[in-house]
Structure formats: structure tokens, C-alpha cells
Length: 198
Picture (cartoon, rainbow, N blue to C red):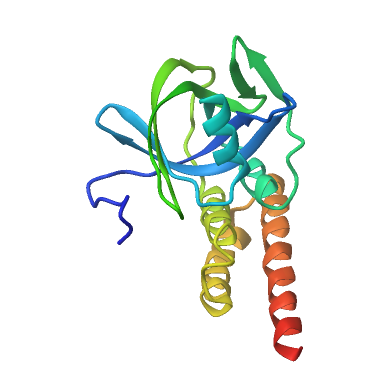
């Protein structure tokens, strides 16, 4: 178990938007926790999000049911429409958001822990719930974010199981997101085979 994991804690998969030095928004999927009234975000190093969080000390948590944003952010497709709403960076597809302010940092060479207070929270649209295909895309997104940490055999096995749900319940959005993630896994596999041959 990771040093930041506790059995009683719930992890919510969200889209985190931070601001780069040039003012452009950086979109990334994250799992966040709530601990002692604060939001805990723990990016692995190296991370653009981590750099932005430490320099700007602010971020916006976006909850969205458009799983293409999760898959897209992990596969180089970050060109999603973002609105600046009085300092909060909001996706066009956001259902609700929280604007955050950095309060405390527990440094670590691999995965520092950053604690944020909520400045503002707003519900924009009702959440209807994830269908099974959306949940499968989010799960594969988590696996793709850990390609460098997990064996290709584990990722392939998980992907094959999740693909059953995709075949049964996916709409066009989920199929598109799924295809981006599968491509990323296949590119990783090809790279591994190339390295093994060399």
C-alpha cells in the first residue's frame, strides 16, 4: 500500500486544470482524496501539473462525464475548450467544479503530497451517472497513466476484460476515447518489443 493510501479514503477521478507559466491551461486526469477537510493531490514526478501547482498554488477540479477528456489528456489530445471564470478554469463539458488554493506541501522525491483548500464550488449540470463503458474508459485511462509502472501483460489482460463492456454499452464518445487509449497501449507494446530486440 502506498504511503498516501488509506483504506477508508475514497479516490475521485477528476480532471485537474492548472495554469502554465505562459498562461495556457494544462488539462490532466487525477485521482484526488479529501483528508482533514482539505483536498489531497499527489502527482508523480516529473509532472507539468506538479510544476504548475507549486508555482501558481491554484488549480480547478472539474467533474465531467465526457470520458474523451480523460483519454485525450493522456494521449496528447488536450485541446478542450476552457473558460476562465474569475480564476477558475472550467471545461465546456464540466458538470461541477471546485477552485482550489494550495495550503501545505509534504515533499517527496517521487510523489509529493499537496493539500488544497476550496475557494469556490459550483454545480453547473446534474450528473446522470456513468454508464459501464464510461467507467471502463476511466479505468483504462488509469492503466495508461501507469504504462511505465505496470507490466504489459497486466495492462493487456485488464484491457481485454474491460473491452467486453465497451462492446456492449459504448456510445460514439466512449468508442473514440477507447481507441485513443488502445493506440497508446499498442505504441507502448511496440516500443517494448523494439527495446527487447535491440
